[in-house]
Image (tube, rainbow, N blue to C red; front, side, top):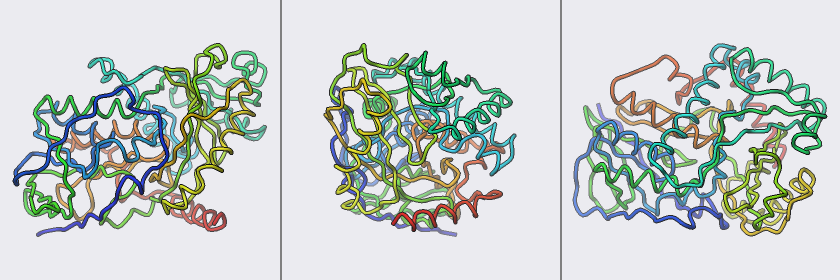
Amino acid sequence: MASDLDLHESDHGQMTSGRSLWGRSGIRPQWQPIEQSFSTDVAVIGGGITGALIAEHLTARGFSVVIIDREEPGFGSTAASTAMLQWEIDSTLGELEAFYGFERAAGIYRRSAASVAGLSKLIAANGIACGFRPRNTLYLAANREGARDLFEERQLRRRAGLPGVYLEHPDLFTQFEFDRDGAILSPGSAEADPLLLTWALIEMAVRRGGRLVSASVTEVHAEGNHVSAETASARVIEARHVVLATGYSMPGIDMPKLHRIRSSWALATVPQDPAIFWRDRALIWENSHPYLYMRTTPDNRIVAGGEDDETVDAQARDRKLPAKTMAILEKMKRLWPKADTRVAHAWCGTFGETVDGLPLIGPVPGMPRVFAAYGYGGNGITFSYLAAQMTGAMMAGIHRDWFEDFALDRDGPGIRKLGEDMARAGNELR
């Protein structure tokens, strides 16, 4: 029985715009055109951070791998990432407990933490020069009610065995100089340059025999024990497995009911006097919607972002860039008045996210031997690492019950109602 999948054209201009600061010191991987049809164990469609992590992992497992991208690797959603490598998920542990129960929610959080640890170990073991720095996170309350919510969240995390402490206003202000009612301080996260990391991972895969090719895959056919990826040049790649790692869109697939598309905006300041930074250069984010998030860079800039909304059209998203940049700056100034708020870079991107804040990883329903790997939300790179581990295990015939937590066709108590509520809120915004 055969299954077919049409892949629609998209370009980086639809996914991102503006000018981020990433990849300035890196060497871009060299891709090659497809001169003839060929066979491989795995065809990874998409050369961003997700495709790169999967290719690196699968080549390390001994698979022959080809990465296929119609444009230069990394310059889609990856280039627009702020690369805050957090284990804390967009949905709080309390929210996930309401969706799936405590044990399942706690397991998801522990696997997220293990993914950041695993990614950190991978970078260190291979000496990847990508501006990687271990960081604490500071999850700030937006108001008194938010502070109560964070206190309850920390209690739940303690029950799950997750690290961190709750800071009341006096300790928070004394230690970090943030004038908020409370915060959770947690270890175990990190930051990086996402383009440098992506390119280094691709080079690692290529050194093991992987290939990086320039091509536009137009159709995927799954039949029997192989999958065919047809390209616009009429060349065909025969593979035992195909992995879709195409960013915010899953072309040709009926989108899972948990999925939706949003846009986000970000900026980087001019280099700061290092003396003005908050303690430990912790990763900063808020428990508000839309939330502000901030980090620093090795050359002493502040990267700030947020202001997410339901904009899908690329031109409409781009028109909002000046106003969104000013809104982020105003929030940044109120939170950290010491900052030099001159902007050196401003950019925006379109991303996928899910109602429960979790990624979409695993087999594509109705498409044998075809996998999806979509590490959505604020934990995109963390989830991309998880996708690489899961995909490698599944191709080796290994299955764990917890893989279902991230399945494309998952459902759970309260999810459908929450999705309807969020859709209504989006319509009101528009």
